Length: 328
Image (cartoon, rainbow, N blue to C red; front, top):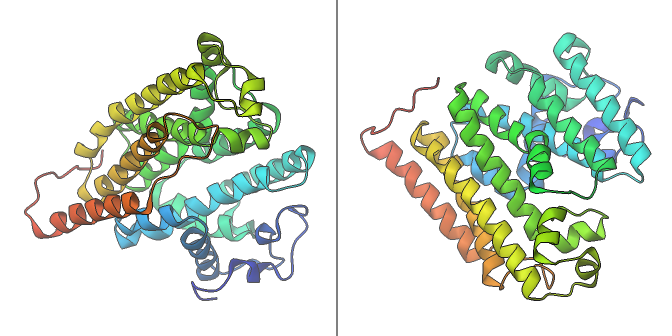
């Protein structure tokens, strides 16, 4: 199968281990070749989420297949939890997905799902541990039973499983192992996670979830009924100002990582950091009223971010090296 073929073609005949999942993610009855599996992941990564595709453009070409397989794992895990009919089915599918992950590490030759076939060279060549992958599955399992967060502390713990493993995998694939870089990455990933939560207050409410922490609501006099009624007032505005400032501070604290890694990775990380700030800027631009409508980053702003990242990559190619960022 070529890299442009549609992923669903691999599942025309399926195994029954993920029955109940969206058809795209069903396991084919016959193990795909590595090229087929990588083509499936490439298609998913480059068509499902534009921003991910753009960001990986700034990475060395040799690393892109690894990031495509990691993205495909994350996307599939998320959709097994969110795109099924009921929580019992989601819990069963995620449990099966975890068993397939363990098989990928213990008996890789037995894996049949394209995600796990494609992940095998990534795991082997980058010496990746199972923990970040398992943590992500745990986050999606938590979403099935814990839908209203009590505090910023619980959101931080949730991000420890739902967001931070992704940043750590990016560093590991890029050859970085230092604890300092991992901690800076955690700040960025948690800040991005919170920015997305604060952008999607109404949408999450419609899905029966609330990521606005209850302790902040109590502190500023905001109620669940108010959010349900989409009633914006000074209390809600002040609360959102506080939450946005907290998320922005996390992005700022983590931004030092850009000066500590090689230029290719720095361009990608900078794009994500600036993207997080842009979401927070969009919230501020509509007076922090995320109940009226979902704040969006304008197309012009996205183009500006891409132009800046492209200029940085071009400079890295044309100018003498000023920062080596040796993996450690």
